[in-house]
Image (tube, rainbow, N blue to C red):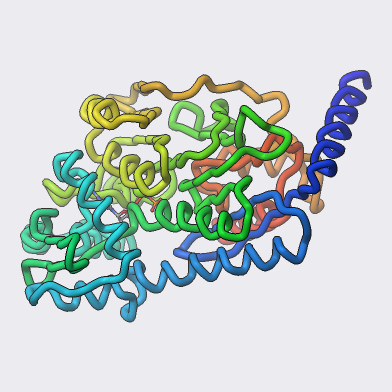
Length: 398
Ligand code: ADP
Ligand code: MG
């Protein structure tokens, strides 16, 4: 009872503080880029919040039309169609994301490579048909892969794909870029206390008003606790945090688990269980690095992170059924297992806590906060839509 009073008083105080600043918390979600985008921010009134969120989602939809490899009409696909041809002038967004991708391709010795498209296509089909790609076709596709076969010209703002048949895939970086850009759009509306989560790719701006000097609270699910609720929490502001791994998207063929992340050197989907969380000054970088480290594995991955200033990582991988975890400057994590807002909500929306917990336990069933779960500024409640989407997802899993 005493604890509750203290909790209530704290909540009251922080609400008062916010009122004094004239700021209210707003949350919006929309599906884009094959995942759920969640935007949380503080604004003075509802009408400006609605306006800003509309502009933010429009920006994300616009970026999807540029960067999608599912939409044949996207700028990316039209560029790929010209593979083997002369340099093509591209938009600033496409240029921006591709130049960061090329930088990380070089730094990671080609572990991150957006020319991976032809190989990814084969593995996508393998996932659908539960059959490994034919080695001959894989070898053929691999001939078209290599970041050195993609030329960018910073002055002319052009891109050139040197071999016919090449296919670009921004799946490992586009969501991070979109999260960063969404923060930028919100800033243009005077909103800088914001968080944007695109599944496991999260960009955060200034902290919430009641978390000054601290940050947004992000729960990090990793391989060492897949069956429990998240143990690690980081408080972040003005940064990007991304998790990659095989926890969510994979296929099991002949008893081996194949991830949706592919090693560009061998053309093989990665098979060892792995989960990598990277923190960087922006989420474009964090997103790409997390994918790269999954390919490189613990030791080489750690070296890559250590070679890039201002990046931090938590890497977990299973080797011979043993779990190895290593971190580099990963912020002190807080164990909030007793007051985790992800798990401790009561039967809000009529879903019993027990079921919600089991949804959180099964990371793959966590509909859109996926492997990184946004706890959103320490509030003791969960977004209604998260639970609804969890429920929908559970239905579809049956
Ligand atoms: P998610 O998209 O689930 O957040 P990632 O950020 O790790 O996960 O991106 C994985 C996606 O990136 C794959 O679905 C594929 O489209 C693409 N991809 C796979 N392997 C690589 C690679 N080695 N380098 C760059 N992109 C890759
Ligand atoms: Mg990525």
